[in-house]
Length: 342
Image 1 (tube, rainbow, N blue to C red):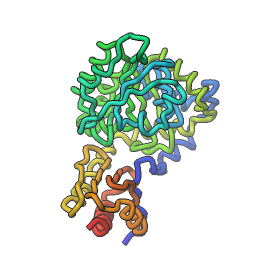
Image 2: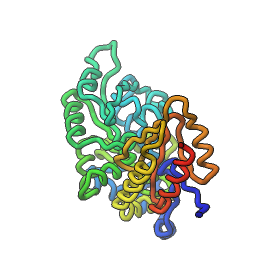
Image 3: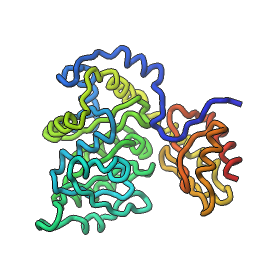
């Protein structure tokens, strides 16, 4: 039996492929603070054109990309409407509030990950000194691995504009959503991005780059974001090494996300039917397994790790497939997990 560790904790754990490493080593470099790193500039032009926006800005992390978006759309005393389980609200250290003095207005996510249109409309504040100024609607796609439908995103962003709000998409896994939609993934990504004023995309998750995200939007918004990135310590010098990895990922790793989705479905099907275990059917590359009350998820995490399968969770277990998990790894993972979760 293989002694390879099957790491399902996140799609952020991927290692650069040999082809990606070669692209990184061959990348022409400059100083991006001076704006003359050709590999960074080429990546920014590529992702902006791909998503149909005027400009893009390369960032070290998705958290910083989202922060720069929030602070570019909103001023001190403004608020953004966001989901309770959204990454920008729950998993980014409260940066918008702490560093931008931007008040979040969290709403309950629906079972499909969306925010009810009626809830969005009700959350928009009147122009009154008692209230923070409602300025931005922030959605996420995928959210918890679930894909927001185009019809829903169109309705939500149209509602936001009628109410005078700007719109931002945390598209950390935008290309997973685009692949899951079916058909031409790059065209799907462009169609989704067209609905929003700004979009953040991550290269270090399913696309497999070692680091980096990009914010795309109008030239005016990206100019503001560039200043905020500097204040947040996000400027890098010979960043073309990372930009080349991201560019390689866009060229070679988008369509292969379908393999990760298929592996997630196989994993979910393999874990179905266990007593005291409820498997949430995955739409993309994230599988959630809910344990019955009294089941010790932490013990399951530790026991599986000792046998070479890593994942996260407590009462809800989370498994994420990615390019370093092969179809051959799934049966072994299922066998170990079924043995532990019986």
